[in-house]
Length: 420
Image (cartoon, rainbow, N blue to C red):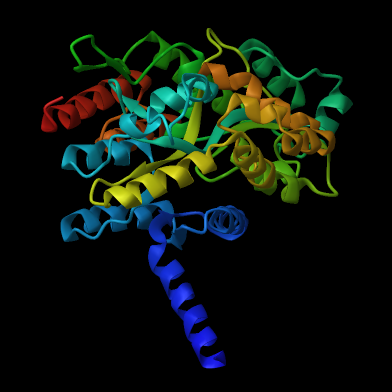
């Protein structure tokens, strides 16, 4: 009898195991972010015994992109994956990305119109090509102004709210304390890369590309907005009010070498570590230029059409779980990324987080003004062109006019290659 019961239990366990739907999820979240993601995956699996999500860490974003592109050729794609929108654009062109409209509208497992609208509009738009939804937002960050509060208090300066106030503050905060002819504290800092140029360009109302009503693209980088931005960056560097380098700025900020810099909220843990025991800090909205527009960064989650219908439905259940108010609030509290749902701020998780981190509300004020990169497969190539232009101008290899004209022509060539 005991043998029969044991046999029956084993049979039941095997039956349960075989009834599970497996969802393979490729991601690039390492370190603490990866641990938090695994916690969320484990919680989902516990709550959904009929689904088994396997989170597979591929490596950094470059490794993940290469793996995805190679897997398209080999026909060995996962069920779902993290992806930047320009990756998604390439994969859509390859015909391997699953449209999600049917799942979003499904009366049983979908989202209500209110729930879909609860996702911040810029994130929704970034996941949608024309009227087709191809992704849901995941790890999203937005740019903010990091401020050394001790330095501003000592100088009697308020946190700047406009680009003019930022320039004035940078001038007043630049100090040669020991009078040896070397700057000990720069008032501001920026990176000689495409990213900080793009932040200033957005706030100044400019764009690298503009989409025409017929779906074609116009190159708009060689305009007055970009010229003003480059003039501002050059002036700040050449007059010694801004420290400039290609790498991240949390280290110099922590050391007190710079008083202010702009970066995404994802830099928060690095800023905290670099500044601990040295000086106080806070963050603030990116100073206003002509608009409140601020770029956001981060990836989405996409599904692949090669999955079975059963896997697609299971994967969608997990994707919905990831963007639920409680889970996105938890993800934000643990990682520093922003919650992708507006109602996340009403959860107990977020309210408790705010008690300990009241400045976490600041980035949310900018989300409605968030702007995103064009959803183009060649956007990486275009970013590289713009980054080269910015660096060449900042370090005197090209004049502003030469750099903008060169970038315009190179971007046009990239678009022409793709028939855009």
